Length: 120
Image (tube, rainbow, N blue to C red; front, side, top):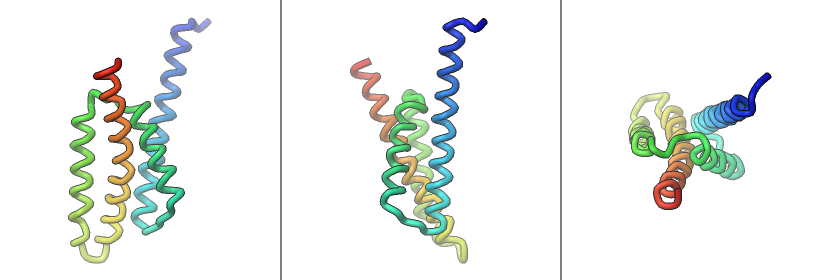
């Protein structure tokens, strides 16, 4: 028979898996929509909300500096990929949308970081 402690660990692992797959799905949807040039305000709002929630509940706020550096690198890469002939606009759209999804994730991590630092 499972104990109460092992049941709570299993529930936490299930929620961790949920947030992880929501993060992966958000990246894929944002990047593919950006690559094909699909623009929709409702999709942007939903992806931003998902990004903030994933940043709040999935990522560890102590890793904020490393994750923020990854965000800056992806953003810089997105700005410089349009020079490739024939595929430049698709690659640029892919990385621009990927960076646009990572922005709210970083925002959620920043909120969690400062909450833990000053109130937790």
